[in-house]
Length: 98
Image (tube, rainbow, N blue to C red; front, top):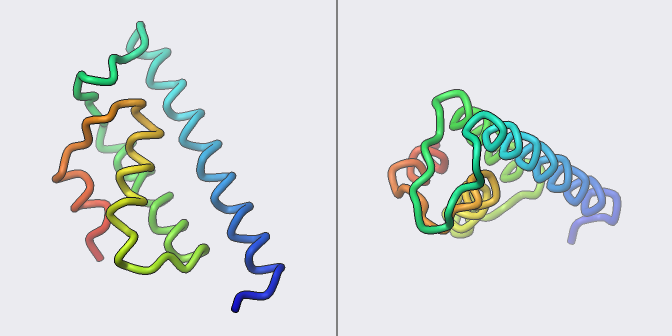
């Protein structure tokens, strides 16, 4: 079992990652004008993809996420960043690639 301080640290890292994603998503919305539709694919720049990958890797490392949960975690990150239900499979595969 993880000591309580490790769990608190993991929760803190996850909260920081979510805050970063919210700020990035807001910046993207500000740059693109109106809010996105949940059914429309959302373009993600290479810069944003690199940030998503770094956040994903930090979450996996800090929260000790098992590999069997990586795909769902990556989908959640992309969904939270874009606000779009449709997630490009290639992006998910790139995010979780070792």
